[in-house]
Each structure stands twice: as C-alpha cells, then as structure tokens.
Image 1: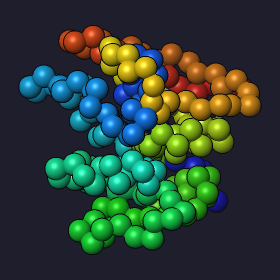
Image 2: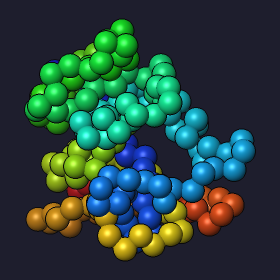
Image 3: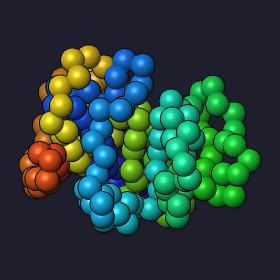
Image 4: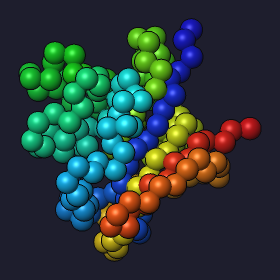
Length: 181
C-alpha cells in the first residue's frame, strides 16, 4: 500500500484571518506589483498535484485562463459530477472519495506532494490531521467578517515555524510544518 502524499496549503488571509468575504469575494486581495508573484511560481513548482473544493473550483473557473497549467487538479465534491469539457484533457477531474482515500489514490499515481486548496476542504483535511505544511500569507487589511481559514477543532494541532518572509506592501508569508508525536 503506498504511503500518502505530503500535503501543503498555500493561501492568503486578511489580517483578521478571513480567506474571503461572506459572499466568497476576495476583492480585498492586493494586486501584486508588476513582476511580483509573492513566491507563487516557486511554490507551484514544488507540487505535482492539487486537491480543491468545489466552491473554490467554481470560483477559479471564472478567472481568465487556467492558472494551474501542468499541475493535475482533483476537485473534491459530492455534488459535482464532471469538470467542464475544456478541462477533461487530464487537467482536472472530480472525486467523491474521502480525503484519506483520495490521498492514497494520488500516492498510488505517483504524486508525492499535493497542494490542498479551498476553505472547507482545508478545514476538513486539518480536522482529519491530513495537512503536513501550511504556507499562509497575511494581507494587511481587516475585512471584519468573512470565511475563516480555520474552523473549530476538538483538539490542539501543533505546528513548527519554518520561515517567514515579508514583501513590499506589508504582506507576510509564514510557513509551518505539522508537528506530530
């Protein structure tokens, strides 16, 4: 049986910990200065597959172009039956497997490092102790209410600080590694 893939979250939050407004909007995210991607290209080159929740996937479909070219994406959903035709060429697929079973399947396909995205998806993976690394970029804006990155937990989940990097405009990116006993 293959060992599960390493999982990593790469996400931005407002200073008060929200990933989106209550309606899912993220207009509060600052537009990067010309030529600055805040480490995105370097990060995406370290993963060989992605898992994303349905709501986030539906948001990404509204972007101009496909932002994950070269990285296969699995949409985790119990309601979505397929991805749009233009993504059925191996770029995206839908799965209703449990998070643990999906990670096992991905490891069986040779995926070693998987990017997990989407608020509820990230929360469910954390609840199941299936996230190995967190990379969180804080944007210096308070939005007051919205969709939080983290949800309720029935226990403490310990993390080790790996690194922190600051960017022009006050963005602060911090990486953590899950500490398990």
